[in-house]
Image (cartoon, rainbow, N blue to C red; front, side):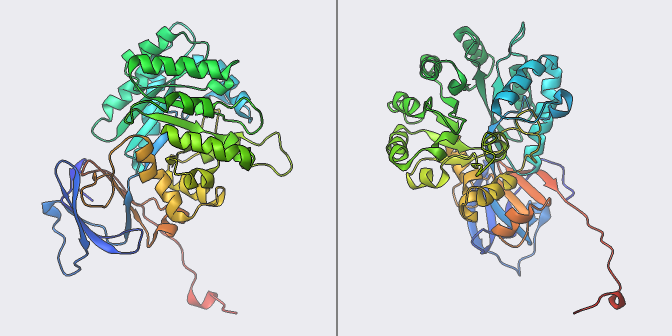
Length: 419
């Protein structure tokens, strides 16, 4: 594809939808899907008129990353942290992050955001730590700068991730500096309920939403999801309220889980599962019959609670791996979360956008033209193989194209023996 990017699109031709149908998708300004019609193979593709040949590609709603840490991303090599659980990761990050300047935060966050974009993610919500020391907002300023730099290529929401030791005034400063939501991890505070209330008080005072790290552990009675749900149940419907991780739900007995999920469903909270990072961090204290570390995915879906899934950390003290690829997250939802492929894909695309409060998108008339085309012959194959060949559409324009070339030696026919 030779055109400069971003490149405005009028029609996507010959793409396969997850249901197997092959279609032509027409777009109209400002970045909206106008029509989805059966593919007309006899009609030539007019690239000069903004038409794109997507024969051999599967077309999906573009993924949204509902829970990233762009400020921490790609710091593993610099910090060289030990392998460990959540407590060890927190300690390693707090001890090591002082070495990072605003410029280094910007460079790593930009690299991580561009990796997401290349893989098809056109919206991301990132948590950014409010730091210790004389310049606690340098990471936030860096990520705000990345958001501005990429404003035509992807949507970025920023959560001020607030330590329980940070004064309320610092959270207000973070919101003034560009953060969109109040965040924190009350479950690691000495008094989780009091810390939850403190953060919600700030959000209510400012009229903004919250995205909290919630109950990221498998054993214990200090969970705070129920209190969080009770506090926000009367919030305006449009105000965002999100609970990330919620690992404790997966180890609650049914008689405790069922009433709690009813409370959460009533509250309007959206839940985000983070399989890559929580499979790495959780369960280390259980060398036998090690729990999976995920939240109660099937129970949350059955309760009608908005559910999304994301990658969380990428190559930092909280997770030494990660490809910044929603298809990796979907594959883990199938393997570790026992979800079917269509549901797994939903949690990283339409489900994620819903939890982020974004407009409906995808190859449907009237939806936002946020689209990802991946070379393949079906949804399951795309998730399983995660092909690198991709075309990414944001607001009706192509913003990234990845193409691969393979050269593989072949055995001569005489060397191949057939049993």
